[in-house]
Image (cartoon, rainbow over all chains, first blue to last red; front, top):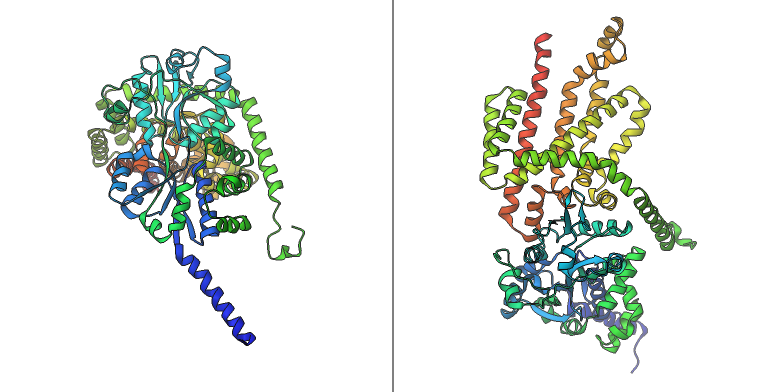
Length: 333
Length: 297
């Protein structure tokens, strides 16, 4: 059949016009929580790049933090995706929301889980090989001197308002930090805590406190995790250690934190393909640390980190998507 | 970047050059922190001890004594019974709502900041009024201090001095000192030339002119500057608590991260109450020292 050139061109334009918005309409507008820490940031950008280039979504990143974002997702279904949500922070509420169908757990984004604990710098551990456990360290208030009160030691706790503040404070009581002559210092913010670590590290001073992995801090300033000397006691943890009202905290240790991607049902419904991808996506702490160290060394943003990851680990992310989506993402890099 | 599209796209430095630049700045700072950090810490040690002493004084003194002292300060400054009673009521309310300790910590740090700002700021203002060149160089510095987002300089300060009171005070003063400097400068410059001429005619030397004529006549402006400095340092309380300064800022931060609305509201209102007390009292003092001028004319 003969067709005039104009008709063909017209058909082509129509076809194009049809395909483009159709692909976008498949997925539509998606909001992803861009949490204010680096590992979640590059995760958000990886999702943004893959969902945009591979699935034609229209992605908007919105700033977030564990509690505000999870609350807003439960109550308002907004944002659609929290790529890296530390479940322990709000487990009961989240589990209830999942049971009621207001939220969906997707992949476990950190395969090794998040590691929380009390750490000392590597150089200090090498200098003092006798410090292995929390109790060993708490015996040395003379070593971890508090600049504002030389008679006592300084223990850098978790910033005010974070959930780890409760657990750290309760464990600090359980291990008799106060009686051993330590003051639990509230660093006020992640920036304050990081600053105290980098200050100690630059001058090779002693430091003891709370931190977590994966983080660029632990990539850049290697630290040794102190042994709590007891296994994780889940029952006591949930009934006391993790609560604000814990009258008699016992020695305990952090569980491996489960870190999942959490998605609203709205997104799962509007983009089943995107959801399938989110159900597979995840990496080990080793990979995460490497990307974080790369970002921090070069002062790159989460977006640069995401591009670095996508270029460096194609064998990893190509397993999460179909071949044609992988080709689209690859082309867009 | 040498392409022809430099007219359309800004010919920015390449990413690598920029990164190199940033990294070398960071490295320099790190070097500086390694070599001078300890010395700086030692330099600020007396200030730290003074602050700890003052805070303990406020915390350990019986609450009624603290209120009595604050109320008599308020009365002496304002000579106004209504205001004094308002001050007492404000602090009683703070105590009843269980924020006494945090409030004392905040009052102590604000007092130290204000005193330091006055001690450093007024001489700088006087110098700016005396030398035009000083004014030309210092004014842009003040602009930077007032507009630079606080976290930009908080992090270097933390890397130098750790977290706690001293970096907190430095951060607060950087933000809060400009008004007292600016208004001291302005106040002295606004002093009537005829009055100065008269002082010269009586053979007043520089010192007599400054302390006998210029500063007293500039006092209303200087007081307005001090007042603004107090307000701005109170506004920095929450920011300062992000680097580990204890006080009302910490519960506010906690409330923000946890969405504890009422906790944030109570502590926020306590900050407002302190602000109003400081503001009214310092303004009343400013007005009172102006009064004799109106009568004298």
